[in-house]
Length: 212
Image 1 (tube, helix red, strand yellow):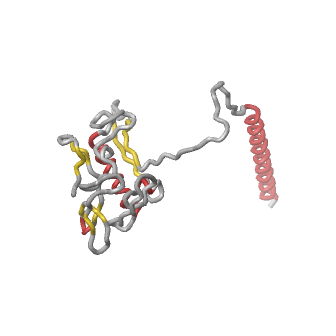
Image 2 (cartoon, rainbow, N blue to C red; image 1 turned 60 degrees about the vertical axis):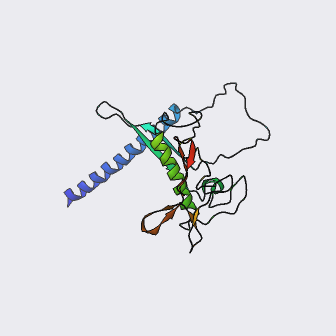
Image 3 (tube, rainbow, N blue to C red; image 1 turned 90 degrees about the horizontal axis):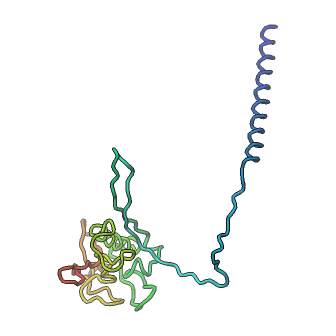
């Protein structure tokens, strides 16, 4: 019994000593950290600053495509192309979801009925198709395009707002119309799905080529 009691006292003493050492080490580390950490200061480089009333214009971006380099594998790096498309219903729908949404500028014609009854989805399909055409024909910025390299007009973006023959600003063109839903479209997909796809620039005729 005496041996057991002594063991318990010894174990308690070791535990208390360990807690004391841990507490001292933590306090010492905190004090050292406070002493060595330097405040982060911004330095003014004597450049002009903006003051007064400043107007801000938000730039809509329905999507984008580009390229980047992958990590080195066996001493070699390779390029890859990518596409990003935003939600057309929440991100500038008047531009990114037209003609299924009221336009933000230009002729204010009534919006068309979306073929899948989803303005955001049908707008994203238009933008994805446009960017896919641009990615295929100008994946790394040195392919087919018009204008400056920083803001190129590509296969689909060279034909903005054109979806069928007879198109003009504010009018998407003479599209097909579903007799049941009244939705406008120009392409048929699997399982009876209907879509609206943008016109593509035809280099052989220097015109915008449409599906209908």
